[in-house]
Image (cartoon, rainbow, N blue to C red; front, side, top):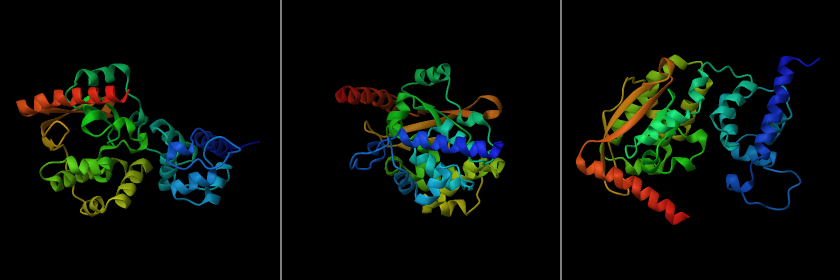
Length: 285
C-alpha cells in the first residue's frame, strides 16, 4: 500500500512532467533542433536552464526519494515558468514546509483589479508582504517596463530593482538611498518568516544575483515604512511622484501602492504615459 510520502513523490513527478511538456524550446529561448519524440522540453534542457544535474532532475521527475533544496525548487519553478500558485504547489509536493499564508499567492479579484484600473493614470499595484507583484494597472505596467512580459516568478519589486537594467537607468536622484531603504525594509519584514523557504529563497537569489544587495543585506539595517517620494525617467519626461501605501486583506496580507504626481507637469506626463502606451499597442496590431 502506497504511503503518503510515496504518493506525494508520484504527484510531484507527474506535476513536473506536465509543466515541462507544456513548454516549447521557443518559450525558453532554445533552438528547436530536430524532430522530438515527446512534446515539450527535454529533461536535460530543464536541468541545463535550471543549473542542476540531469541525473538529479531525472530522479526527481521519476519520483525517487531525494530531497530538493529551496534554491533548486526555485530554479525549477523559474525554468518551467510556474506562476505563484504552481510554485506553491511545487513546494508542497516536494515536502518543503511553507509557513507563509497562501493569501500571499492569491490572484486579485475582479473587483480589486477594477480599483487598480480606475486609478489610471496614476501607476498603482497590489504587492504581497514579500514584495511579489499581484496586480497592477496600465500606467504601472508602462512605467516599469512591460510587467506583462516578465515571468510570474520574477514579478517582485525588490528583485526587479536590483536585477533590471531598465529600473537602474530610470531612477533619478539618490538611488543608493533607495536601495538601502528597500533592503532594510525587506530585512524588517523577513523577521517574521525566518523559517519560510519562499522568503529565504528570495533573499538567497538576490544575494547571488546582486553584489549591491548582498553588501546591503550584510549590514543588518532595518526600517519600517516607505520612502515618501520617488523620481523616475520615462518616455514622456521626468516624473516626480508621491508614494502612498494602503493595507489590504486580512492581517495586512497585501498592500496597494499608488504613485501620485507631486506637481502639475508630472500630472500631465502621467496622462501622456498611458496614452503613449495605448498608441504603442495600436502600432503593434
